[in-house]
Length: 321
Image 1 (spheres, one colour):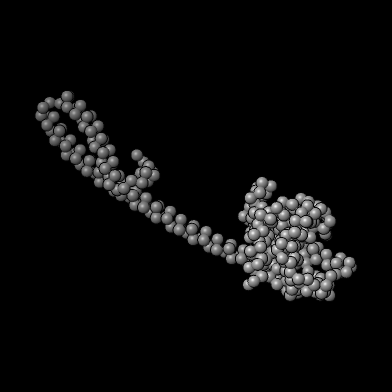
Image 2 (cartoon, one colour):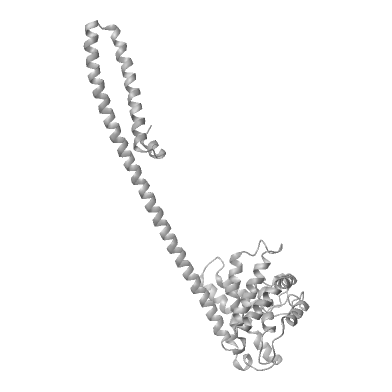
């Protein structure tokens, strides 16, 4: 048995010594057979002298071999212990590095998320009537996306990463409003046709801004800005193709934008503005049902209705805080 076999099997020192002693004894027995075979050719006197000589030599040989083997076994075991210790140290170092990488990754993601929300807040801060609109609509978007993941149509498309991304990216939907003048953005009352055309431009401003930012990353894989860009561009598109800015229709509208469209409208309907009072959940519900297949994706409307108790409770709780 080689020293590598001993290390591989990881025997303890007593087991190694026992096996090596057995091998030495087997070797001694083979030598004895050879020497005793020679006795047939010697006289009685020569046999006595030869056996006396063999006894001394064999005992000496056995002791020498045994001592050498035991020392070898001890050395092998020491190497085995050192290797085992090194493996443990490497494993501890690996775990430490993994924890540091995970911690740093979480920190970077947190900075990204805070930055996204801060940018969105910057745009919303110009309109004091919106209150916690961003917090509410991203929660509605998260709830809808999570429930959509359980539908046959989207169970293979929506994963937890998608659900998290829509939560953090949806507040960017109106970031383009930073490019709209205060006279239009803060006008109390309805906008004129001309003013509304200018207002619609916030989708292009927001989408292009996030698209340019995304290009700066120079990554082939989808960045955290990718979904935000789609939402900013397309959250005012309508299922029947009558929306803006591109007049997209049905599934040509990114799913994330279709989700945010409903969440955004629901919160707008149930929120108070300078030019209107807040609607009840029931009134907003009726408008959303009426818009199914026209303004909204019918599947998303179905999911909204399945979630309406949770959405209503959240809405009431947030407005009462």
